[in-house]
Length: 257
Image (tube, rainbow, N blue to C red; front, side):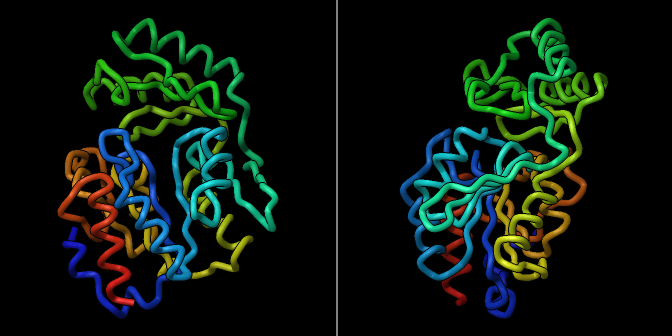
């Protein structure tokens, strides 16, 4: 990983799309900072297409698509995309997405709550359509990454897909990903066809496919905490974590354009 200060003007000039994770990428200790939110406005005002790519639920994505200065949002780790078009909210659900009433997810929930002390269903579960989110570090007590990996193992043992973020283990039925839905959404909505026109900001293991695919990928500083869980690290890293790191990266990008 190279310092974000080494991002070149040549690379920056090609960027048309800015994608970013939400939790611990644009937030700091669970809060969306003023600087990070201003950075989203700055990107939009610069004429770039701005799309959060998150594990957060459908209900949150409805609000984000309507009220943030963004051109759409991919949620539930690729199960869905929401965007506004001429003042109307549009929705696309991945054809492989399976509702989270699936019995295997119920079995996973029961096993996790029985076998993993202090694990709990995420408080935003009521707003989800397709996945089950297990909280290990959003609220107290905050559990270790080893615990998160154990939760992920249980999900996989039961036949589900599972990803570890900085706060949740998300698990679902059906094959899809943040990367797949991001590419589909950008292509259909904007005619995207070149990964060199994208810069992606992330912070944790569930962002790894994005880091691996996009040559201009950026990890905020806390990505270093997950080195042992990530084979494909981002190309660049910021000095600061969370929203401050995102602001740092956006500042560098916009200063070169």
